[in-house]
Amino acid sequence: MDTKLLSKTARAMVAKGKGLLAADESAGTCEKRFNTINTECTEPNRRAWRNLLLTTKGAEEFISGVILFDETIHQKTLDGEVPFPQYLESKGIIPGIKVDGGVHDLALCPGEKVSEGLDGLRKRLAEYFKLGARFAKWRSVITIGEGIPSHACLYANAHALARYAALCQEASIVPVVEPEVLLDGSHTIERCFEVSEATLTATFAALRAHNVSLEHTILKASMVISGKDCPKQASVEQVAEQTVRCLKRAVPAALPGVVFLSGGQSDEAATAHLNAMAAMPGLPWPLTYSYSRALQNPALKTWGGKAANVAAAQKAYYHRARMNSLASQGKYRPDMEKQAA
Image (tube, rainbow, N blue to C red; front, side):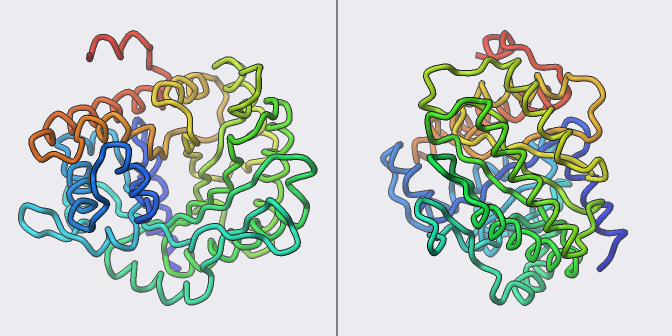
């Protein structure tokens, strides 16, 4: 465990005005997204799409690190055949890697999930470190519904996150722990607050129990938000207030930073919510982004699977990254979207 390297990596991940690009979609998730642009989900097409994002000129101004998928960390750039991790390093961007094995049904807990992938993880982390990965991500999902989440679900997922985080730090890799509270459902923002606080409390209790160094851990958090089917949707200000209140109640100040997932929000909503939070005074940690769709969507639609559209798609991705960079500093305004149009 190289604490100096862990500290250096963690600080760089949440550097002022920068955030993470989550480009760790599995082939299955890529297929769903590619279907929206009528593009076949082949390995060459996935490589071309990732190449578009990772080689966008100037993106390093706003992107501190990229979460890669196992396939991606072994791929190379289209121009020059440079391994993606090596290429990112040359731009000052930290390569990261998704290491969980996806969510599966939790036995005896109907409607609830647990993430798997701990078997063989120590060996995989050593291999990823050699490939250039300096941080990793493990995602768990918590569903809000009638009678759920259960204590068993919260405990099982917190335990897995803690074991993963300990193995990461042993390998000198910064763990990003992501206990995602899903947006699905008709729950109110108040119910989301209750579940989010319980989820975070369980997660940090498990991290402490497994001797995980909080000073070398990054939280990837959900925002406290109304369920997508809730008839009363919370305002930007309410989301910001409730999310920060929840974090202050459950997240230790020792963490180097907190990054947010967009969790199915629209591109601009995710940016506006982050901006409102980052502008609040008295935050004990930097707040920034670790977005997938909220960074990629406009570029994906512009690209449409056509090589002729790469430059325009990169411009769209650069703009989205810049807007979120401003939001992470509390400097974003919605009228900036029109100015760039």
